[in-house]
Image 1 (cartoon, rainbow, N blue to C red):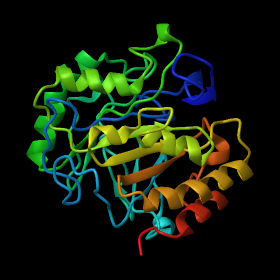
Image 2: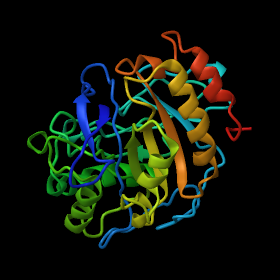
Image 3: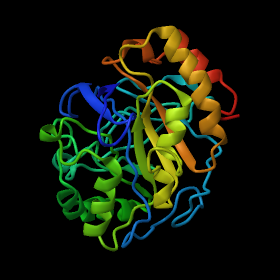
Image 4: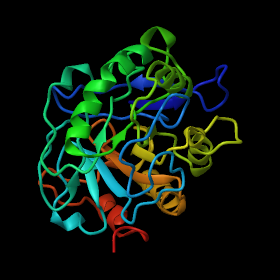
Amino acid sequence: MTWRRAAGSLGALLLAVVGCSGAPSGPRNEGGAGGPGGGAAGATGGVGLGGAGTGGAGASAPCKRGIAANVAPGAAFSPGVAWWTDWSTQGASGAVEFVPMFWGASSLTAALPSGARYVLGFNEPNFKSQSNLTAQQAAADWPMVEAKARAAGIPIVSPAMNFCGPASSCNGIDPYQYLKDFFAACTGCQVDGVAVHWYNCDLPSLKDYLEPGGSLEGFEQFGKPIWLTEFSCDGSATAAQQEAYMRAAVPYLEANPHVFRYSWFSADPIPNARLVNADGSPTALGLVYRDLPGGCP
């Protein structure tokens, strides 16, 4: 998704959709802005993330930095970039760890790749243009995700949410409320981390989105390690603005003990944010991202 600010009852940071992308059956050019998924009432932990265990809000990973892209990052991204995802269950293997995703109900019969260490849940299910699941439908489908993750012995990350608008295009506008409803309907479900997306181009709003006590509720409320699985400026930003935001956001994400992993959005809907060339090599922005302090040693 591409986003712009919009006035509304959720305040100045409520976001409205101005563009969207395809499902995994076609080019997986995604984008979006937000979603919690952690220890609300009835939710239980599973294997835990990186030894954090259940409800481990203070979890941190030694290598957080990742990329969300349609093209696998090549060896030149290693070791600064630790992982990548392409919104599917089966991505190209290579120098960078691939993290699979059960994108929606249509992908629940897919197999997980051998050696997967984590699995991501549904992509923006409150969007009818994305995986299009009500909170109750997502909860009803979650045991199929659990069964495959448990068989592989790996942690599961929550559905990844966005603010959505207009209401007629959504299964709920507010991502915080969607996940509260999901956990209420999914009593006892295994959810080991919180997946969120964010496309506002400034650090204060990113902090507000994740942390409690500001104008937004914050995803730390769910008591689970946070995966920021998509973030960048939106499609209106210049390459210089993308780089400036990256240089501000990455040190914050590296230092935040509640953020377990994060991945910059690198796909066609936001060309000035792309990190990966068609051959898997880094773009100029990709080199900046790889080399910022705090990546894998």
